[in-house]
Structures are given as structure tokens and as C-alpha cells.
Length: 463
Image (cartoon, rainbow, N blue to C red):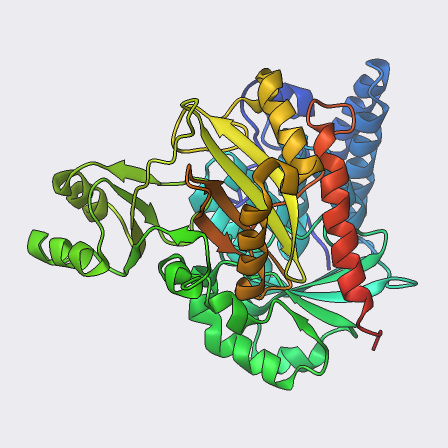
């Protein structure tokens, strides 16, 4: 029997505050979101305003609520969830959140609603509620199939659901050619491995070695009985922890890596911290970052032992401490190049140029400086000409030593012509830009990456 839950159920607050609430159309009356007539009135209003999509959404809500009130056998939230997902996919997260919350009020067990609501909450910094919904989603469901599979390559994607650290695979595995079977293996029991839909090959998307480390035994068991090819096998990913980078690339000509040490817990004393740094050959200033983070999250330049002590005492969990190298170019700018490796072959992805040592593409204001974009274009069009054969030989050697089916490297070129490696692992982002935007010049390079990944996958026959 399907019934509309009581309106005071605390787990599902349907109110979306401020002007955004008015855009969705809910009222201050707590019962209104569960009243079909309320949604019919809003549908009429949206249509009068020329918002046909909004009108249809409210009509679907009204029909769904009618079905639940009548206790119809076929009553369900799938159409309403599709409405929410439509808004979610177009980036209209305020409206998507409202509809997902209504879906979960009617049926608390819709995993995709929990999953996408978690993503929305995480994007606005509500990490605690996001984590709760993410946990709920994967306790309900571990396998998510995107695509029909007809005339498509069926790719099983191993994911870590409880945290970030997955390879951004959306561009690599387009829905036009791939049926994506996402498997939240950190929530799945071993016997679920044998209950999966048929698949042609596996892509291990758990690309952060710190995230993968607690799952090592579970991943090894999966690989041991998997009969299909596994791209980016967990053993290869495990070698890419930041403190192992120097030893991984040891002996490669023209390659430098700053010394780095892993700290699983705050050192017991100042003397212990000094000893940890000394043993690793690290002098100040020190770059300190929490483990399993990317994009500069939590990254701090500590000029003294006192500063480092204060930073480390505030951390929960592991961290990395690395020597800082001032890598400014002769013109005073810092340059960070990114090369993607597909099947160990290097393909240029971007160049960011910044006046600050912490270089990220968007914080570098690349779009505001034509000269920066022009220098990036030269690198993307012909990296051998832009960097020289010596550098590109070093990059190619790094790709072979990294030995990933998909991975990448962030680096700079020192005045002496050597490559200084910032990081090299499987988590490197590559995505298409808007065709009408300032960064559209990057898209041919992204397409080459996607095409190379498709060629690599095509070597493996379907199951």
C-alpha cells in the first residue's frame, strides 16, 4: 500500500529558502508540496509565464501525488525523479534539489535521488548531509547502469562511492558508444561480484591511491576472479602515492621530483616532526597537504617548523609533506603543464600560467590574458616544438614508468631543461569545453585523448 508520508517527517525538508524557493513554487504552507491541487495551480502559473518545462514538472508531481493518494498499484516516483534529474543535468540544482526531496518524501529508497542529492549538497559545502545521502544511496544500490548496451561497449566501472578519488571518466566513456555499469565496490559484498550485468571490460576508476589503499584487499579479490581485461589495475594505481613518486621515477634522465614524506598521524613532538623531515631530506619551506585531496584543497606553504606544527595539529588523518621548489620562469610567472597518458603515450591537455606558485587553470585567469592562451595553443598544437625533444623524451619515459592505461602528469620545465614532476597518477581530469567559449581551442586535444582511449579499448574483443 502506497501512502503519502506525514508532512512533519523530519528527514525530508521540502523547503528551499529565499528567492530560489519562489522560483520552484513551493509555499510557506508545509502541506502544499504534497497537495496535488497546489501543483496544478503552479503548472497553470508556469505555463502563463512561458515556462512550459516547469508546467510539465508540476503536472507530473500532481499526477504522482494523485496516484499515491489513491493507493494505485502502479504508483511510483520514476517520472518525478526524471524531472529532477533533467534539472540536475542542466545544472539547475536548486530546482533539482526540491524535486529530489519530494521524490524521497514519497519513496525513501530511490538510490539515484539520494546519489544526486548528495552531489548537490556537496557542491554547496554541506558535506555532512551530502555524506549521509551518499551513504544511503549506496546502501540501497551498488550498481548503476547508464545505457541500453545495444551496439555499445559494456564497461564495468569500479568506483569508490564513499568519497572522491574516482577518475573523471565521463569524456573517456561517452554514452553514445559505451554502456557504463558503475559499481560501488566499497559498499558491495564479494558475492555481488558474481551478480553483475554482463560486461566486456573493466575500468578501475578508483584512481587516487590513498582512497584505494583501504580497499586493496577487496580490489585484489575482485581482480583475482575477474575474467575480463582490467584497465588501470589496482596494483598499478597503488604505486602512485605522492611519497612514492620520487622512487617510481628514480633514474629517469632529466626528471626531478621533490622529496616527499607521508605522515599518517601528527608527530608526537616537535623533535619527531623534525626527524621525519630530516630523514626524508626535506628543508623549509614545506608544502603540506591532506592525503586524498586534489585541486589544492588544504595545500599550505609552511615557512617554518612552528607553522607546520600548527597546520599538522589541525589535520585529521594522513598528510603529505614535501620540499617546495621555486619553479618561476625567467619572466616571473609559474607554469604548470598537464599531459595525459593513454596506453602510456603522452598527449598534451593544458598549460596554466600564473603569478602565484599554486597554479590552477581557472585561478590563473587564463581566459583574461590572450598571450597566455596563445602560449597554451602553441604547446597543445606541437608540444615537441614548445618544450623541445629533450623534455618530451623525459615525459615519454615517465609515461612508460607510470605504466597506467589512463593517467597523467602535472609538471614544469626548469631553467636547465629538466622536468620537475608535481604529481603523476590516474586522477587527472580531461573534459571538453564549450564550443562557443574562449577555451574551445582545447577540444581537439581532448578529442585526441578520447579517440586514443577508444582505440585502446577496441583491442579487447567483446565478451
